[in-house]
Length: 168
Image 1 (cartoon, rainbow, N blue to C red):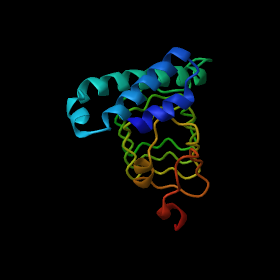
Image 2 (image 1 turned 120 degrees about the vertical axis):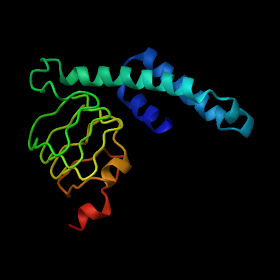
Image 3 (image 1 turned 180 degrees about the vertical axis):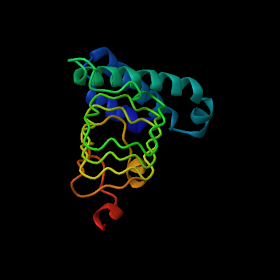
């Protein structure tokens, strides 16, 4: 939760959302102080609060990419979508909400995923060569490690190129 909150803090422009994020981060960090605080934490409630603020930031960021309308996105590009094996090479997926989507073995080579929400998306064996992931939301190292990319794939600065990408 702290990883995602740190990313959200760097992406929001809303001072109220920033305050919420800081309060959530402090509450989680404080709970990590000792065993009694950890056991007293209502993880379900905290998860719900974090999820809510992450979705607020997602809407804020994605709306900037969709300001001219979302007609460039297919209706199938929704949270939890089954896009396994889908060929989407070189498409603009800017601002897509692909949260929890199944992108297993999808061909995303050369795609622009700026502003796309990839929280919990399954990228196992997805082909990301030459894709622009530099401004995605909620992408993790584990997701990248499960995918296939190359030196031309653009990544957020806080993530590393998996070794198997550079050796192929």
